[in-house]
Image (spheres, one colour):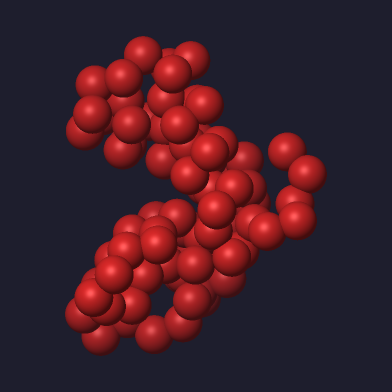
Length: 79
């Protein structure tokens, strides 16, 4: 998780100013409910690791899986 402010309990991204709830706009639906692990993983792979960081898909999938495994929303979830 990131230090210094509220972070999403699903992906660790900083929460948008004024956003309430546990999950950021990337990990939740319009009502604030957590999206499925598969959807959150896909978005993290494609938008963050491949899009912003330029990783290849296989490497990005491993990085996303590792990152999500440390987040409270996914603790104990078999993947």
